[in-house]
Length: 450
Ligand SMILES: Cc1cc2nc3c(=O)[nH]c(=O)nc-3n(C[C@H](O)[C@H](O)[C@H](O)COP(=O)(O)OP(=O)(O)OC[C@H]3O[C@@H](n4cnc5c(N)ncnc54)[C@H](O)[C@@H]3O)c2cc1C
Image 1 (cartoon, rainbow, N blue to C red):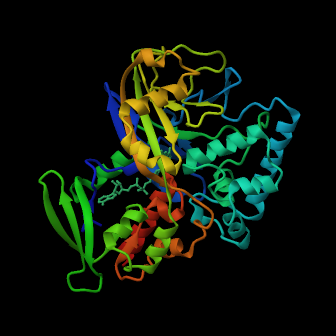
Image 2: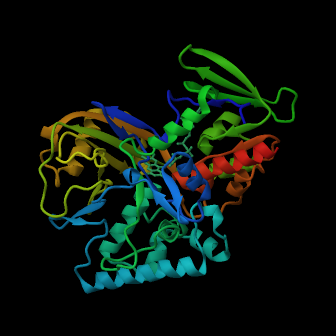
Image 3: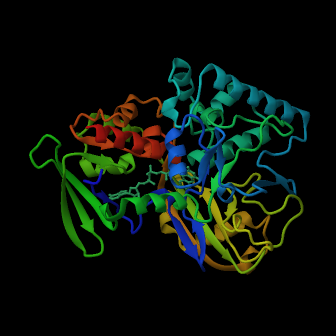
């Protein structure tokens, strides 16, 4: 298909999967990794094959090792030292037994209900609906899974993938995190290797930059769409009013088919209420997590606390933030040196105004404080800081969101308007690359077939 135009308000495509550069070093602004696609994700596998990142050998998928996260992958700062992996060590037998209890619950959910990534490839049954009707925290309480370490870890996973705590996301989301991928493996469980992930210094911008390059001149950056008039049934079709940021003039585009690949709350502002009942219903359900991403450029290597060596992902037990990834981790440099650490922080929704209003100095101080227990010399070693404030970073899969009929309707173009379509991670009620990409590919297929 080449009879299309893609209007993007930023100067580059990629949305939440964009990257940045500091002193010549690439670093992410948002999304930073992609788990290896499983059997339910043939579209993502195909993309990776097209980009030359994976090939078939003797019937097996062989990934290009340069893009697989190098070892050591993850470490957790717990009780004064770094430990390999992110799950807190089970020092007490009660903790270990709760880890085993949760592992068994995940395995049961996988077997009895079925989970998949992307999520629409799994069945949606009364069992899924029941999980979607309650918070993950209340479901865990009901299962007697209340060990402090287990609960901190699960809460961390929810904040990391969904931008909100276990007390806010649905039990469906909390279980989906594990059951759609690698399961849950307590320390000492050798049945599974640690989940392999693909990552790059600039994060998932590595993927979106190449996808944007394919689009070529049909991609129009610096075009903020402000308003959509008309309809697919009228002679002119849809009228899309965009502001050309470079020329500072308005533009009018006309289209018979319109794909809104924006978050749903933006889609609703562009179309106006009352244009699509499904969109109005879906937009009412959505709530978004604000995130701060701080890229911290250092002059040289940081002092290390005892324990596991510097890893790609470095997390502090008990922290309200999410730790940091090291953008130089994938380089083959033999000695540590200057680097960029990308610190992530999913903030409570109530902090969105402060995220916007407080100064960059205040936010930098808060990030440094969060990391001070593991890197007291970070302030001295800091050369430059780049903060990315995401006001509405990702939709939170609160109870009742994933199972909403309105999302299913929008994902299958049952929008109530001819020629009106949606393609965005919001359609899955939570945000990861696999969901966003598969919605786009599926819709493109439908449009091509007419
Ligand atoms: C901090 C952070 C970390 C993340 N980490 C990961 C990760 O490691 N792995 C992962 O898989 N996912 C991660 N995600 C989730 C990420 O959102 C998805 O992977 C994916 O990028 C979502 O893509 P999308 O196209 O659905 O939406 P978006 O990225 O939201 O894209 C929407 C696009 O619409 C454009 N737009 C909006 N309004 C207008 C307008 N009025 N006019 C024109 N254009 C407009 C935006 O500029 C943007 O380019 C992360 C997200 C954030 C915020």
